[in-house]
Image 1 (spheres, rainbow, N blue to C red):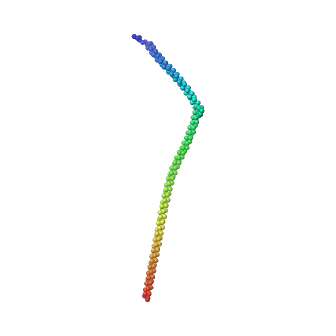
Image 2 (cartoon, rainbow, N blue to C red):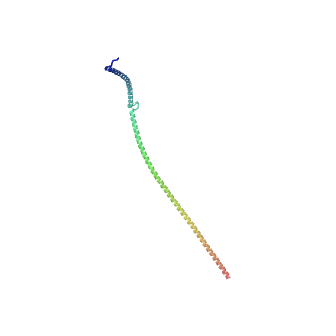
Image 3 (cartoon, one colour):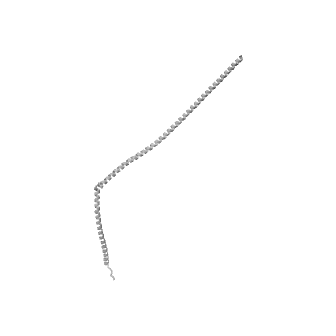
Length: 196
């Protein structure tokens, strides 16, 4: 049979368990600290290497490595970028002026095109007017020529009529003369006939 446990026994038991647990935790903590010391040692070594690298980079940036320092090169690059910006701005201004000039030229060309179109229309109207005048002039000349032809034809007709009238008058005169001669001859021959 076992004896009943007292409160002290329970406290001691619990204390022993707590100490055992604390001992395990302390042991684990010491192991981690040792491992951390190794890690810290490695970190220190890496930091020393990094420090040397930064020091070398700092020298290159400030003083250069046989060439101009990076700061000088960056300053030169900034100057070149600024110059390029100015060049672009000036060329943009020139481009804008050229574009404005081109727009002005386009507007003037549109105006000239309109003027040329109007001028072409006026020239076309003038040509039509001249051609109409020529047609009218040719028609007037044709009418004048026709009138001259008609007048000449009338003159010819009148001359022919006058000629025919003259011929008729001459024929009448000749007939009358012949009749008079015949009458005279008949009268003469009858007078002799009766007288003889």
